[in-house]
Image (tube, rainbow, N blue to C red; front, side):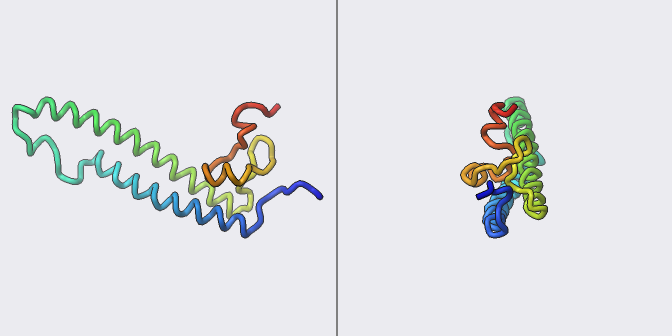
Length: 126
């Protein structure tokens, strides 16, 4: 029997459901992070006592910078998930971009946007 070269349509639908669920959660998390950066909830140093303002501003700046980094990382995750959906549409999802072999289902369930098998990621591919 020949080695399987792609996942079946039913398997791709299973992965699509996983990705859509993660994408929905990721977008909600991104909006929370973005609102923290934009401070859209209205809590800022303007509503604190002047004596704490300097400390508050420093902490707020650090907090906003961290939230900004997390938001950027979350956006990359969202983009990777969206790219995985495109690969599902093209029926190329789950194929290692280095080896051309199928990435194990267990890996794709854990990291649904993966484009490399563990072997390729660890550099074992020549």
